[in-house]
Image (cartoon, rainbow, N blue to C red; front, side):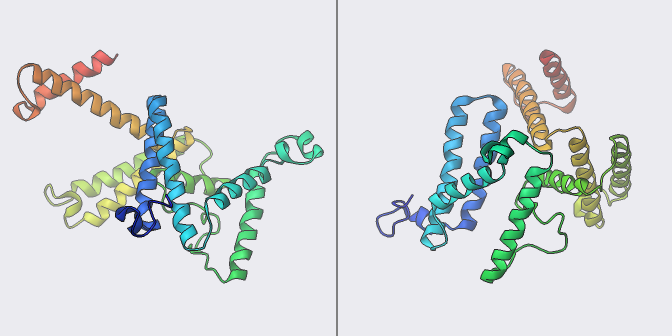
Length: 272
């Protein structure tokens, strides 16, 4: 990476990249790792982990060029953190004998956060996050929205802001679905979110997705993984439709909804 980013002799594209321009690739590579795991493809997983590691190297190199930190600092930092957060493994003989204590991870993390805030203040470095919620401040903005919703809800639940069971969550889901249905059906024609009530439709749709993330959380499901599975199922069944039509020398554009729906049912039945 140092060679790639060396002026004149390096790669022009790599040289001009910044933290901001590389960040989207970092997210993409993390998703590709998750996809390989979902498919159980160890060959792809090995490659995708390398691609993800490259992202760490890339960001560390840019930071090194700015005199901020370098790759060794990143590796040493996470090593120190794991040792610090596992006293039942790396601590004193007494700590190891006592074993893992409930809430220990969060308590140690809270101490680390306080130390980081103090260090930032001493160095005159702004926190960089809105101070509107101390409880939710650690939830990264860059997470996929469904995952972030679960993280936000988890944080709030730890201080008692949570439904005690799944039943009221489903009640809330039905309530939000009803509110979306009401505003969507009242929209002008088929314009949907592009019509006069567009902002309200978007808001109600967001509320429904947020409560669905809460349903997933209560069911101990990863909503991103569940949606990836649904996406793959759709791709697989639509591919079946395309193949069956191709056998007759046709494409989906040459068919109609009734025929494609029947083929969809065939694909669904064959999977059973």
